[in-house]
Image 1 (cartoon, rainbow, N blue to C red):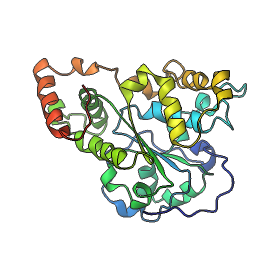
Image 2 (cartoon, rainbow, N blue to C red):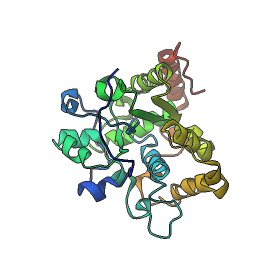
Image 3 (tube, helix red, strand yellow):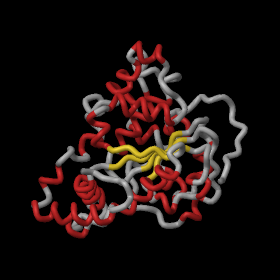
Image 4 (cartoon, rainbow, N blue to C red):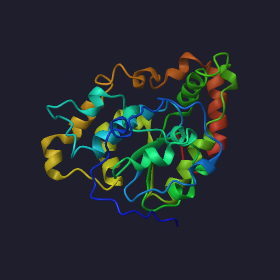
Length: 282
């Protein structure tokens, strides 16, 4: 087990990445980086949290919810002053690590952030550096969607760099999902597996679950004062209506792109790939 070593001061983070690092990371990454050597110099600190997801599968919303939850002591979700999530895109607050490391800025930019740091990645669990995935002091929160919606989202994402990509050529998603699912079963104290569809049905319950998981549970006084609902409202689709969060497709949007036969075939493939894992989207 890799352990983080850090003499960081008392927690003052997370803070918006843009405010500290003076640079805005791209809001998306064009694929999964294949060279984990870029990450060898990265050493997580105690309390670091990594948000993981396939592209366009609730990433923006999870970034907003996690930031609002973890930073609520410094940035109350109903503060009279403009909250960072009101003036900034969630991607400005929570950087994609692979973008920084690919640009040769990973260590310098990440070191500038106070603890606890909140970061994001689209990388497969299998190629995360051991300093993250085998570290009891570094938490991972993963979010995914119903597989058919996930494939549609991945197709939209891939067409940004491959505009002529056929829907039928969209890559598989089950390896990405299974990697984090199996990690969450093996180490539930360090990997939390969330479903976008379930979060839509119960955002309050899932925000509270995530807060407990990162070691920042809402106190009874906070719950009585409605702070959890304040976080959910701040990060609602209505509040973030101008961001990409509302352009990722709705639950069940796959029906606009797949024939019933395509859907049945994909369901059968997914069922076969997930068989025996304990994971189901039924």
